[in-house]
Image 1 (cartoon, rainbow, N blue to C red):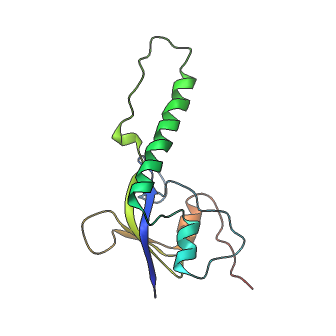
Image 2 (image 1 turned 45 degrees about the vertical axis):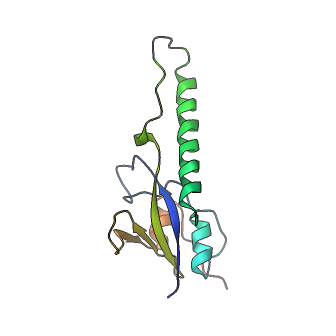
Image 3 (image 1 turned 180 degrees about the vertical axis):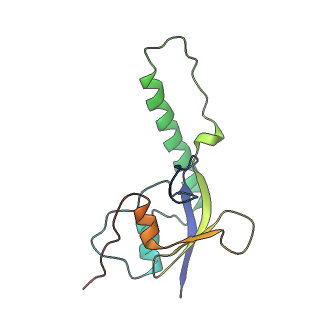
Length: 134
């Protein structure tokens, strides 16, 4: 089965329940399942560029920090927090196959550290796996 290889962002702080590592972004809402690995990679918001995802992860963390700062704006006694590495989503190498299985490589090992089915990725965000095309 052909694999698409690239990168994907995963939450810096994973929820107590669910997938570990947990995808940072929900899969795109689609009407029918893709039939190719590249199609699934697009649905999962994967990227061929590690650097682009790292930039996006830092920008996303900075936006979240700004929103938290606005929430605390009335409290003049609190110091501004610097963006820490723990706040930035992790970017791991991934491979996706034609069935939508997501292979995650978060170590230096040649074997994936975990593999999620398409149904598991969608369920992590409370979404149903879309039906097959007629």
